[in-house]
Length: 170
Image: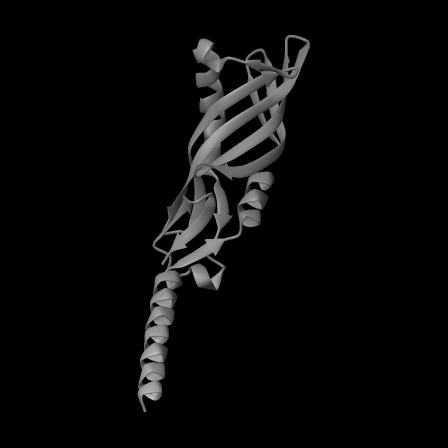
């Protein structure tokens, strides 16, 4: 009888742990990183013209780092019959619009710039940094992912990056 009582108490305790874990994890659903990566790739190539030439970003690579989305893209800058190539690395947050069930980029900022394989210190060139941030901040206005058609995302409260993964808060 004593063994049966201990076994019953153990099963009740185990059930409570299982129910608690279920309740805790029920409110968090992840969005696959591939969904975001595909959304980023669909925004490229990007071309912006300016008075003396144009710049084109292409071949983006994205990953999560320190709870931010990092996008690295190659660029070609054609100005005054001169062609410059390199990479630009941007850092961005994500924003979820509850009304439209769409995911957007937010706080899109240029973090690193290379020219012909050599790093350029963008802190010494605030005009370039400001102009590029303004030009490519237009990406914030375009949806990254539309979750309206995915049934499990119909009752979403918020979406954010946690532990370098996109987490949905229900």
